[in-house]
Amino acid sequence: MPPTEVPTAPGADFASRSVPRHLARGLVGFGLITGSIALTPLVGPVVLLAAPLGLLALRGCPVCWTIGLVQTISRGRLKRECTDGVCTLTAVRRPGSAG
Picture 1 (tube, helix red, strand yellow):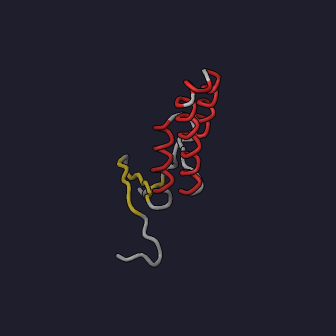
Picture 2 (picture 1 turned 90 degrees about the vertical axis):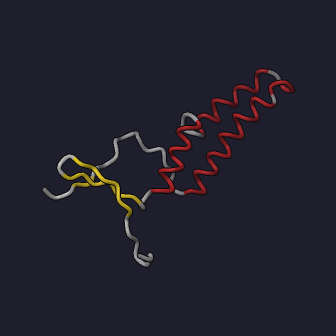
């Protein structure tokens, strides 16, 4: 039986189009969350309304953002194939790469 490429489940992708874009989302998200907590004593509890915007920028939570960072970095570098019910993860060789 020939190997088949297994697509990822819909909605399981937290990756961005590029690493700089993903890092920018993280900077905005973590900045809003940290700022809303740090500024609470100065501004009052109303500043906590910025925290949900930070979570929105992170696409849910800091762990979701971290998973997305790993997905963004590994996109196009790893390939998952399944043969006879056994799945493997292999590195994709790129043209011009050593090895």
